[in-house]
Length: 392
Image (cartoon, rainbow, N blue to C red; front, side, top):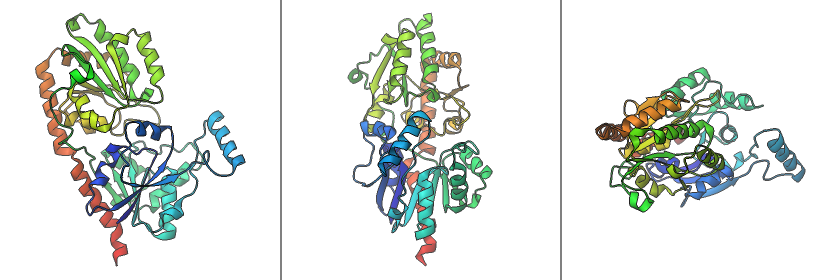
């Protein structure tokens, strides 16, 4: 099988895991655009080693120089998103094209390849807000065309499944697959605090993710200020370790200084994927404080299941699909509530037995539900189904 993988600018080792485990070892070509987001993933290894790469360009990167300049001006001064230059002809000859979301130019181009060349189209849908991403001109039309024309839709959560019902998708073409991690790699183990410059007396809270406001990092820092000021924490120094890089980091560093938390916060920068299990094992608590907005709620949270697989107690929020993923294996609080975050982390700091029980429960849930091998097998079945009509 020749698989065209259209992940846009979001290639990373976690997303690519199940594709490397597909049945029959298919030939995979990654269609990839270069952007600030993809540069972020490249810093820690984007996982595309060994894959054929097809470079795709935005209208701000290639094309007529005058038109390109106009697009750059619109992007910078009028907050319009760049659009992909057409590439559907490069999908000719593939057995399956796998794209993401109803509203993307990637899916629109893959749909043209389906209509012209008969390339079966699979769409992964993360979105969990009905009629989302329709403010920009043309997005609604793309969504409607893709909703009617794709062969299969893969969703990871019940919320995404229910959202597609509102979008007039034929639900017989929707398949729910639980994504996963390698639970033999992300597993409980000895702490690596010494190598990370952390003391055994530190109470380590780990954050992994973007430094954008929607991830709730501001509220976690407010909770940290409360924790540092709490007399009950004397004898154990609260330390927030933040793994990540990219847009927003300087803003967060300024907030750390304003809150006088410089001695209690560590920025590791971007880390390669193979270093992440040790990071999780070195934490007393993993915090995942996502908030919600009109156009976004937490769609899944890859680091959430990685922390669970490592047996870490988790404090997180009721944003989007988080409750569905974490179940009763995490402490769940309302989003945008730094006091609730502080109180929950404090409770875990005061009770090592509770931390141990919650971590064991999280590990068991991850092993049962979020195994990447099961994900790969289910995805292989989807590809077999969409290719079946062509076999005759």
